[in-house]
Amino acid sequence: LSVIISLYMFFDFNKQIGLSSFKSNNIESIVPYVKLINQEYLSDLKDRNENKLKSNTEDELARNHSIIEYAVKVKNTTIGFWNGDKTTSPIQGSYKYISNVSKVFSQWPESLPFPCYPPKKNAQDIDKFRYGIQFVKIPKCASSTSSGIALRIAHRHGETKSIAAAKQICSVQYTHESARYRSYKLRDINKSFLWTIIREPTSRYVSEFQHFKIARDKRYRNLSSLQIDKLMREDLKNLQIYPRAGDMMYYLSTEAIKRRRLAPMYDKGYKIKNINVFEEIVTEILNDYNFIGTAERLDESLVLLRLLLDLDAGDIIYLSSKTNGGYDDGRSNEGCVLIPKPNISEPTKQLFSSEAYIKFQYGDHILYEAVNRSIDETIESVGFERFKKALDEHKHLMALANEECLPNAVFPCSKNGVRQTKMAATNCYWDDSGCGYPCLDKLSEKWEKERTSQLP
Image (cartoon, rainbow, N blue to C red; front, side, top):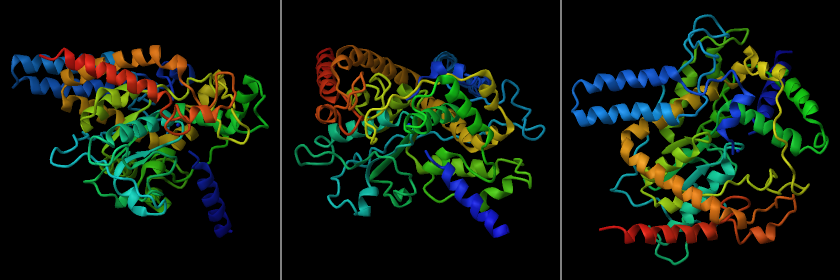
């Protein structure tokens, strides 16, 4: 009997690991129990900076205060999970949920060449996963848009960095495979740049549910919003809880996360006793990656990516892959499928703060918190003024891109849901990633000429 139960739990556990553009201003309507600003972290940041101020000059004092003001002003992430009081956990008595795990992402060393190398022609050659631009594409984490950035960097720098051959792109990975599947543990850290974008776990769950369990399943495609909401509520009530990490943690880990490693965190009733193992796994993930950003702070993340890799401003501009009327990428057998917008009822929202759901997403929330903290600390490391200048430039270029390039961009699915993959093939790098790049290239070239003409 124990063998049968173990097999059932194993297969059901793996079935759950199905792993993706989100606008942060929608999150309050989905999860009102998630605080938009981690006040506890901001307070900690303020305390740390105030301690520094005692021995700093007046200029440095002003700079440190500007970091705090900036964090309060632009931080729009969804970090806190306990609806206010983070010292009391609904899981097990008094417990401090906020983790202290973080990492300051480092600048690519000047002593090393830019990680751009010719792609291997043999698709089976594992060496292609050991060098180049390596993007781990987690579904429903602004992944199509972000993979377009990875492709844009590879295309634009193939001729200018390490490759002498004309019109040769850098080796780049950008499809939906996990880090373990790609064997990134074996990558050459001096010849590769490994990065990804993650997303607030609850908004990712909602997006994944709407996309794969509703839009891609023709049995449910014509359901009303009330019927979809009921299906989501049933899904939330039937979550299987046992030793597990989060879906994003599994996707990003370069080594297998075995259940026996997670078991010490739980008691016999699968109540969480501690988060030590979660923090160990998150620390390992942070150390394995050159950079991790978030979908909710995508523009900030891309600006940091630019500064860490010493990229051009035109390398990180984009058109969102999901601006084509709400249709998917048109790759399913059903053609272009309209993804329904979430309309979450109050009873369903309440399930997002249930004990079962909290345990289900626990590891990914610790990962998400650690990445947001790391973004803040990396901004502090590169320098606020330098970061703000680059962010302002990026926002200006993005406004121009949406004004000049978006109206004429061709996506695999039209705004009316008509598949147009042949037309999109000359307008997108791959599938719905990097669409509109010919116009973006012209815009970048024009901007660079204007910028250099104004230099002394």
